[in-house]
Length: 343
Image (cartoon, rainbow, N blue to C red; front, side, top):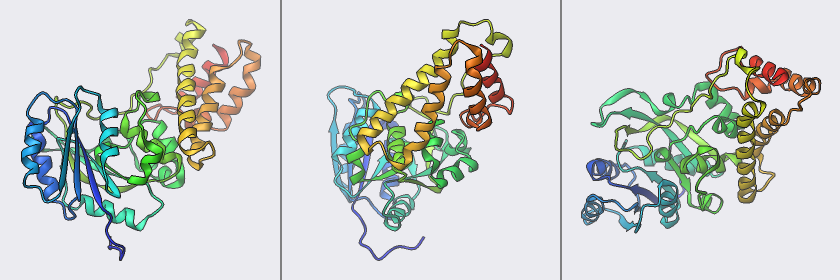
């Protein structure tokens, strides 16, 4: 990718740590090996009890860029801690960093060039190679693990990022960079976040609401997996399946509970996004359509004859298929519609 004639933006790295001394030095070395070095590193430590902070202070003494290390008096959790780190950065672009990975040397350059060539983009993310605790490759990537398929990537490029993300987060914070100006919409980060998302999912969703999130289709780091991680990889969980014969013996409130929960979570997300980016943001349409579908399913009348039209309309317009789990087989949407009609 060719560079532009514009001056390079100031680059910040937002690093959050918690008892990370065992692997921190390798991540640090990969920052020093970047083709385009950061202008500053902002560290927010979440009340580590090992020597993480002392190690950071030692490394900072010889760093070729400014280093700011702060420590929370008590552990706040990843959502609040990353919010603090992001807010403290002074660069034009902010790269989110975990304490135990290794970045490939071209990462910051490639992502910065992408921002420079795409001024309407607020968030950029990339894939990552999966590795074991010793950083030996495991032979797969993060996108493969979370089912960010070629089909989903095409949907994303067609403006359906919100739809993809509502199927489950596909974006890993440590593989993400954002414009500093985007913080006006994204911060503060809610805690908890509706739908079970954490900070990276929130940032991705807010950017998706304004259709300003894009990806670079290659791994730009090695992602270490180990037992000491606070979060780790969170593959989407398929909803529990209910056999057709069991559908007619369960209580109706039990059947409707997951739809009501989905409706509540989606409504809360929509309210949050409306406050941050406005209710007419172009990227909110998939959320509004999904909300309408689960509202329909949660509100079906007890009279089965009155259910016939809304269920048939949703089935033949493809809504049951569109909102089915990615792992569901061809029959599952029809079984779901039949259950809604008869249970």
